[in-house]
Length: 294
Image 1 (cartoon, rainbow, N blue to C red):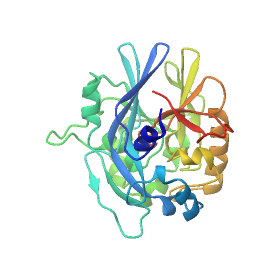
Image 2 (cartoon, one colour; image 1 turned 45 degrees about the vertical axis):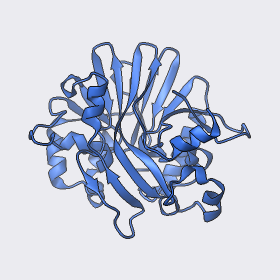
Image 3 (spheres, rainbow, N blue to C red; image 1 turned 90 degrees about the vertical axis):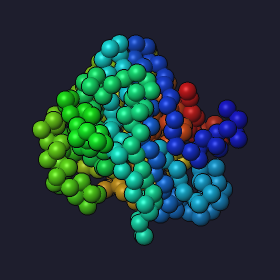
Image 4 (tube, helix red, strand yellow; image 1 turned 30 degrees about the horizontal axis):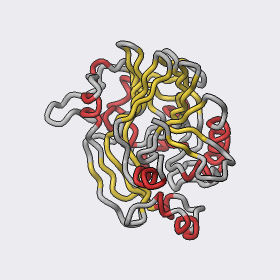
């Protein structure tokens, strides 16, 4: 991929992209986008860093991040990992390192790959922030019907146990009451779908979970918000402003980056602009460690 093409993709939200892992097909399903104030979102970064790496920033100096989910299909069966932001748009708020965010496209993304929401057997949630649970509690506009109302919501037990901590992130009691009847808590190492296992990765939230997808001799780690930008692969010590426990989150990122550098291991970063699928190539000396694949 040329440098110009890569730079362009780093400044735009994700589009539909799929890869194969043996019998499994995994597809990035866009729902919308969020803009992050780079310097404020990653407070340990510096102005010099961003001056040296303008390729990550749009014209306004924002990190442009996708919002959406990951569809895992095996034949007629399907699992969704994360449920986007939902049919909402929120403008920038003074003092908030998260600037504008919008969602709403996930149902259309599903339709584009020929998959109806009713055919999803479960939605596995990495964590309970609003941009990951939007369509789990929000009805389809004009219908009053939850698109995934008939399936389980898989949430790591520590995340559900500490759900009260999410109040300050806008996760209201009403939202939790909507989710609660469908919640099935899961534990570290549990297989939740053929070839998909839970991997606890707390730090961003109290019970943040990654999902490890294995097939065809390879594995893909869908790591949720353990990282928000590909530049964190080069700087795992940089915690995000929204990390509940920055030190623990940094330890988890270091472990994650090392794991992603192992043979036959790929990653999926839901917020990684339009380079969501990639592998880590450390110490190459000729570019960033995150190398996109399609």
